[in-house]
Length: 98
Image (cartoon, rainbow, N blue to C red; front, side, top):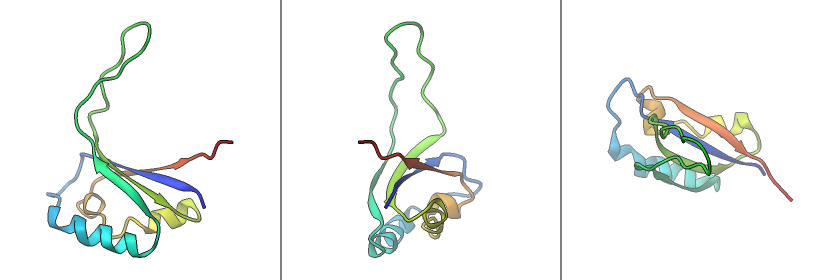
C-alpha cells in the first residue's frame, strides 16, 4: 500500500479548531492508515554552493498515511482541522524505492 504525505498549508480561511486534532487522529488511526505527523517549525534551506532559497513559509505541518490510492488518501482528509477550516492540504505520494 503506498504512503502519502499530507502537507498542511498555513492558509486557512477560518480559525483552525485545535481541539479537533485529537478526534481527527483517532478517526484516522482506527482506519489503520495513520503513520504519524507533526507541526513544522522554522528552519533553513541549505545548499552546498550558491545562495539557498528561503524556507517555504506556507507549510505548517504534515501527516503520513498509508492508502490504496490518491483517491483513498483524499477521503482521509474528512475532519482534518486545516482542511475543514478552508485551508490547503497538499497530498504527495511517497515513491517506493528498492
